Image (tube, rainbow, N blue to C red; front, side):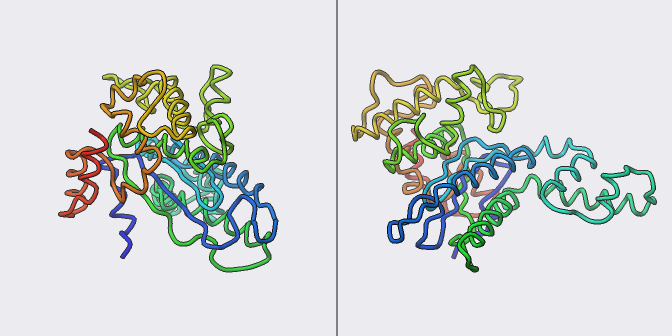
Length: 326
């Protein structure tokens, strides 16, 4: 029986999650249908555009993504602090970018508190609190993304029915090692699937978007930013150097492409040294992440804490976590 989403997501333990949605039909989400010769490549742009738009509305940052032929990979960061700091008006304005809301919330956004009674203002605040929770909820994020793509695909295909094979799958990423390995796994998906030869040629991925902006000396505003190594008063963002991460993805992609298992060319990048992951283990993590891990990923201590908070006795990933993240 599938694990309930509330048992897969625990913001007490981590704000980082790997989410996967897979298409149910023989006809691809994207790519080219070999049986009919019809191309669905344009749908990749649908997914990327909607994904980046939702990242600007929700209190959820996009760390990594890859739009594949029949599935999507996302690494998401839930920014609970940001959501709690929004005013009632900002919450409602953000929600109205996605849904109509209620007559009262529409009036509040248009006219402010003027013209609303005290009882109506209380009702607006209560509704805004519901919206606030939804805007930092991964399930709502994935629901809005997947429903929109499914409707557009069904309309284009002239059919009805299920487009995705089921609800999205989610993995908790409990520490830096798990986060870095999963992000690289996602960014390298097109190379592993032989859809691209290099990260910069990997269309509709976060690594390609990062590279395009890096060439201009920038980081893309649509994605979670790299802020460097952890500090006492650390700004919000990924606790890695952008240059280290890009170098690591490039060298790993080269190793995967040339089928040199257990080898990363030139030297072992600083990120692997800091994360205490061997080159052999790193290559396995970035090619088989979802095969070797089913559920939450992290070192023994954080994995144990996560399972305890979920009131579970078993730690199903413990052996592989100890082997590959050590």
